Length: 429
Image 1 (cartoon, one colour):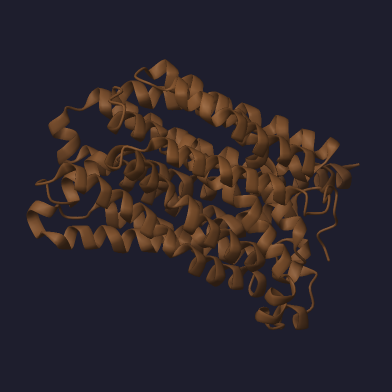
Image 2 (image 1 turned 90 degrees about the horizontal axis):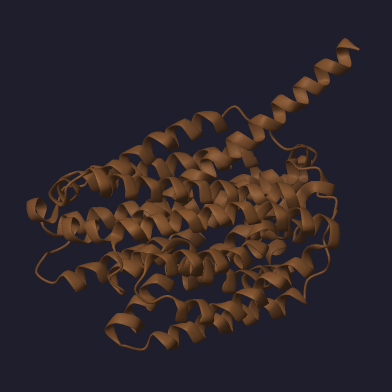
């Protein structure tokens, strides 16, 4: 009896460590990207020339996109570490590097004090974060998928976007609180730095937590020969799966960044909705998103991954234009539009971590997902905020961007039909 109880307690402790260690590091990554989008106006005014405010905002968003350029390199580097050294090591190193990037932004001198060097420091920091974040998601979702019971893997996979959204929510709430409690002068002078310094501290804590995790049985069960097998021939052999990752991701990454990340900032700069009200609308919508994720995850464990993925892509495509038309000049419109879209986005977001892991064998699971996923996010997700701002504000053609987003969602829906049903697959092979 005592041995059985001890094993049960050990299992619970191991599960808790897995969830906390994986979740907090993932939350920190998403928090980093969310606060950058949220505090874009302040970064633009402090780290770029004030002579042309519109150009400064576009430059800040361009660096947001440039940060994604490093992600494929991070996907390969940390994917290689994950498949050769271990998932745990890859996850730990990634969150440590992301923390360094946050610290650099938090302490960056202003444009007024050192000129263009301030902008360059921001660029370097974002490239460092891009490198780290390119390895974070594939490493953490591979680790989580391999640790999860196969009959509940869809539900466990929801931790990736749940923890990530908690990170976004925390960053958004922090932005709302700072906006309410600090004057405009204080925010411009030093208030905008607080979220980045806090992100660096949280990253350090996540690094410590991850260093205490256990390696997955799937990785430990591989032979030394399998771990040392050349990666490139395996990548070529699984090129179809890599293309499927890109196809499944392309619509999700654009629509998620539009509605889940930059919508409050876009509403503030382009639609002139009050900054504080826009942030609170985003808080409401992200809570709805968190509530929807486990529903879709559990449903995929019952009816299969493909039906849920298809529902998410088609539902998002069908609702994008109506919700865009709803959004005009009020925070309640933003809250409703974001909430409706995030319910459908949640269908895909909840389970893609499990689907990606289920497409590849153990020996190439991390890098096989990391490289194509990072390339897709860099090319499409990273450029989405800039394209939306440029086509809408500068060119006066917002509908062109909306058509672009819907077409990519249809592409993702079509790719669902190319993948096998992976529900309940054994990941130890």
